[in-house]
Figure (cartoon, rainbow, N blue to C red):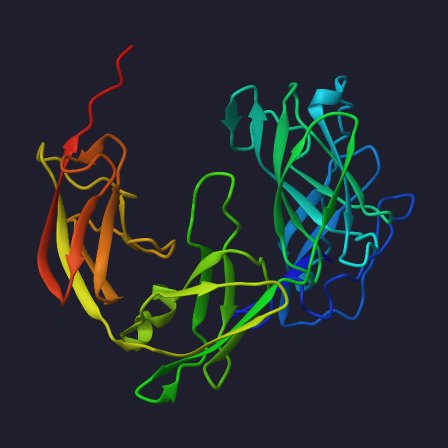
Length: 362
């Protein structure tokens, strides 16, 4: 079992911190396996690993719905050392770190960089008993940007040169961030806290960390990568039913430290209402959405537009926001991708006109 998550509500533990995570089994000659004694409160992500094959995930599997099924693809063997990164993971004492997940985050080709899942032989790899791993790209490259996520330790980003040399990467426990979410002195339970790197330059961004508050409004996020500044904020969607909004908190992490952010005060949020209108007079097409995103935050609310284009966002705090209408063939004229505006109180009649986008030149 690679990771897990609760069926309802928000996780109060990191996805790999549940007791059931790390349980494993070996398939028989027919590919069957069994892992017993799993918590009925959880859904699981399974990681399948076999030598000579690409690692495969089965995501959010519900054991109550029957057996998990998956197929594994045979891994192509790279013909050029410049297509490969060889690594070895150790902890601070030099002990090999096994079963760490290694994920591609980008590749250097000459003077340029590439991002995305295109052209990779290995999208993920897993370190073996000796802490060793191999990542491969379909073309010669100079280096690869990798995110290394050991179980129970902090993820780390590493840019490693391709070639026959094996690189040693040291991983650590990282930092912990602890706090409490309250409103009017009372705790806010079952809200989801979102933690994201403040700098979001491609190749330097970690995956978002999410953690739920307990009955006392408390939360603790463990194994946070050190040496970075993080944005910490309750997800808007988790406070909408309570009509609350909370400010963004900035946190700096150091290895081995516990950061106490104290009480984060949520206050009554504002409401932003408006309408999307198409300049050519066309009706709102089915499936058109509009999203609201705070400045410098990865959080967002998404609203499915009805035929009349009316929208409403609740639990909006003070600050700068962007509205992103998503409809094929249309865009806002003021900005290519969205509309920027300031929230200092509730806003009504916030109308957004979308114009037909120009077809790309051929």
